[in-house]
Amino acid sequence: MDMDGTLLTNTNEISQRNKEAIHMIINQGVKVFLATGRQYDITVPYYEQLKLKTPMICLNGAALYDGYTGKLIQKKPVKINHDLFHRKTAEEACNVIIHTEAGMYCKERSEEVIQWTLEGRVPPQYIGDLRQASYGDVLKYSVNTGKVSLSLAMPFTKDADVIHWDNGFELIARGVSKWSAIHTLICAYGIRREEVVTIGDGPNDISMLRHAGLGVAMGNATKNVKANADMIIGHHDEDSLAVFIEDYLINSYSMNLGKTDMR
Image (cartoon, rainbow, N blue to C red; front, side):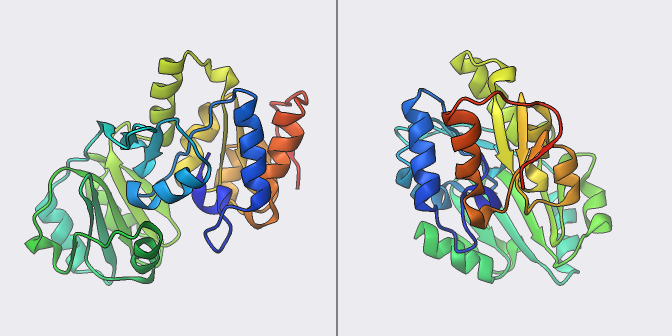
């Protein structure tokens, strides 16, 4: 399941009802994976709240972490023309976050970066002119322009997969997605695709909503995300995740794989 806009409330908390519902399906033997665009450091606190031991999918599938040790067990770096990227983003009024195994490297200290620092208690590795920063393999580039930025992202589409948001875009390695990471894990666990339920709200969730046995979109998702889901439930601030789990997983109701709106 996704975190922001799905598992978490608007105040970045896991409601008690969501926690209880997740614990109930875990006790039934269901494997629960968090699949997020977040960096490891700002995923772990919630992972620990839920007492999960399954592998953690971070940075839209570019990084997989062991649930017991926190060790990085798989990474898929994105390789683009760095000079072109820095030149293009330097010309724009935007913030850039470079996500690496070691942490975040940021052009500016935005509200988002401040919030992430509070949650993960780990500050960015660097803030400033990223052309002067020294970093290793890049797992994800985040560019926040405050608007849809198709033209700014266009030069990088040959070398990277682009995820467009209303306030910018992200670049990840070709073929990397939340679903590609989920597929790796279900193959390792011997789980069939038809047995997988995915829940999310953002454009980075579309791949897993489309490919799972049942893809569930939150009511707060955009029209495009909802169009790729089999089922639509309520808003993430209304314990809708828990309601879905209680009605369709805990109580073992028959799942309708057609288009369903539970709002």
